[in-house]
Structures are given as structure tokens and as C-alpha cells.
Amino acid sequence: MKEILLTEEKMEVFLQWLQEEKKRTAETIQEYRHTLVQFRAFLSPDFLIRQDSLIRWQQEMEKEGILAKRTVNRRTSAVNAFLSYLGERNWQAPLLIVDQQKSDARLTRSEYLRLLQAAKVQGKERIYFMMKVLCILGLQVREMPQLTVELVKAGHGDIGDRSRKRMLRLPKSLQTELLDFCRRQGLRTGPIFVTRNGNQLHRTSVNLSMKQLCEDARVAQEKATPRCLHELYEQTQQELRENVTILLLQNYEKMLEAENVLTAWEVEQKGG
Image (cartoon, rainbow, N blue to C red; front, side, top):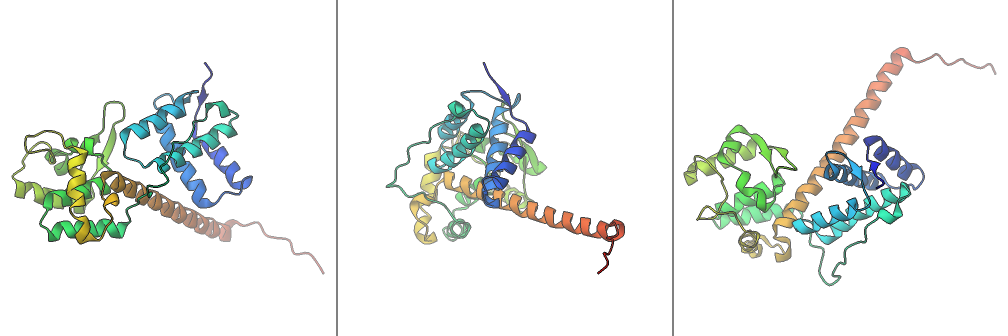
């Protein structure tokens, strides 16, 4: 069976082709790069693209139920374009059918902050911290039991399933808040967010708790979901990566200009 090794070099050549030949915007290039990096992570550990690889990734994203269908379709389109560039159109995946009657609800950062404020006003400390963990750390509801008192005390730790572990690092401000929350709740060890019986949280219960904040927060109920919080996390991370890239390029240009002052080849002046 035919296989293609997805290397970082192949990705960069494709992105350069998009920029130079297809005249895609910097924003589009950045989105495609981010998608291809995620697709490559999905292919780990061998990084081999096979005929069914994109369909399997699409099915996994849809199964997790975190991303909106339009988001899954944007990622599918990006990889489809890459496969077309490689000459493997028969490896492409069809886009998901989107209900046009449903709005593509996206939670803005100001709406997220209003939900936090509403939780504070209503004295709902538990959902306040659950929303923060979902949006700041990018956790999924099914991963919440892995956020333990021990991990918060350490400030970092591995999280995820056996096949896809990742390092989770807590910002200092969130770590301090969570430790105070644990002290108030009498939590000394183990998971921070579980049911009263010690079982795993259900997405429906988190949804319900969030929707009870919507009226005070002036946020549409369809935006008060863990999925929308996760998408806000991803959007924020992408914007930060773009800003870092711009700063790196600016600093690189300054460094080259400084070196050029010292080492530039003298330009021969032509006579009139």
C-alpha cells in the first residue's frame, strides 16, 4: 500500500507554493500550517499518510464532539489542498454536511469574561473554575478527572490518553486560584472536578451549569458550551502564535540590519 512520509520540509514547501503561486494571505498560510501540524501529530509516531488517513482524522475530530462541523471542514479543506498538491486527490475526504439553519456559534473573549463575572455574582465557584480550566488550559470534559490537586501543586504534568499524552502547564495566576479553591473545598489529593459520588463529569451537566449564567452574562445559550470554550482556546493560541511569528521576523530583520552595518559589501559608485 502506498504511503507518504509527512515531513516538516514537505509542509513548508507546500506553504511556500500557496504563498507564491496561489497568492494566499498570511492569515490563510498560518491556518494551513497550524492544521498540517495537527494532522502530523495525529499521524504520530510514523508520520505516514495513507489513503484513509484524512478520513480517520476527520472521524476522530467529529467523534470527540468538541469542534464545530465548520471547524472540522476548514481543517479537512486544508489537508485536501495539501493532498491535491501531492497529486493524491483520491485520498481526499468529503466535507461534513452543515445545518445551514444553525448558527455557527462562536464565543468571544468578552462573552467568556462576562460568563465568569456572572458565575462570581451568582456565587457559583465550581462552574467558574471549570470554565477557566476548559478555556485557559484547553482541556476536554473527559480529561477533567486528570486535573488533580497534585498536578496543580506541581504546576505541570502529563495529561491525555496513552496514545496521545501531552504536557500541561498551568499559568501562575490560575495555579494560585485553583490551590485556594482546593483549600476552601477541603481537597488535599485526587481529581478536583468530579461528581458528588466521585464519578467523571458529564458534558450535559457542564452545559446546564453554563447555560444558567447566560441571562446575567448577556450571552446566547448556544455559545455556552465546553465546545465553544475549547474553540476560543484554540483561536487564542493561534493568535498568540501569529504574534510570536511576527515578533521573531521583526527581530530577525533588526539583527540582519545591525550585521549589515558592520559587514555589508561596499557598493561601487558608478561615474556619471
